[in-house]
Length: 311
Image 1 (cartoon, helix red, strand yellow):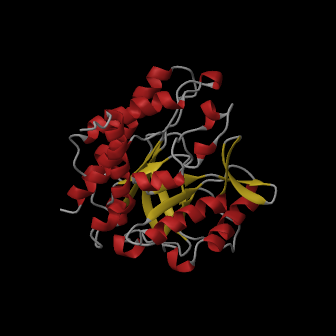
Image 2: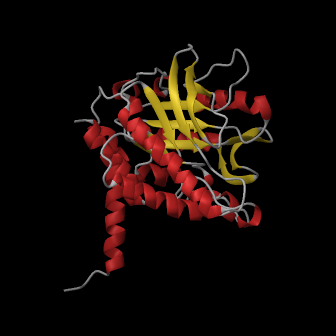
């Protein structure tokens, strides 16, 4: 009998898991509030295409958007920048070599293929001022049909959002510009913010708890890793205890060091491992968890929490 190499079996297993995760939301009850769904996400989701020599400083993902979807990711962080007359995805000064409209069409296609699913897209302008923010809103409406745009409500349920995309914007456009989804307020960044808000175009407002401590601002990397985890663990703990209509975006992403010693992967290895160990005994919703370089086991562990949320 011909033997299959172990590495071959591992690759087959990984492909099967990802295929199963293409539509993992099928089993979610329609009545569950979206804010209580545990959603694996990626930070700076479009960075798989960053070229050398910027990869060390700007690449936070090894999977492209389609691969992330297949792995089970349902929260995508996209950073459009006005580059000439088009919006392209950037991370800081680094081009990700994909346009904003190309990114949107990939997610649109995935939802068309898997109509039981939904996803959340957070936009955050990488440059171009108010013009770029206004163009972001316009591009969404050009690329995504109205019936696929989720209308934000604080207590929206899975039934309200199946087959749709909810957009959350870190930047507010010019007055009079139509806003698909909602905008954030009171979230300056690089810390923990329990007083932030999600606000719809119709002024419906939800409380947002956000943790995005992404750097300590110095080279003391080990101290940063401990502070980062304490913040993340604290928010995980208090979100478990609330049954209010609170939305939670709890970033595992970040980087150690500064300048040439910036190290995204060091934080990913450490914080992702701590999170995976924590989830081994944590059986309650965690909200949205954006990650850098998430391994399949961690993505699956977050998805698995929805088994308990549905009971």
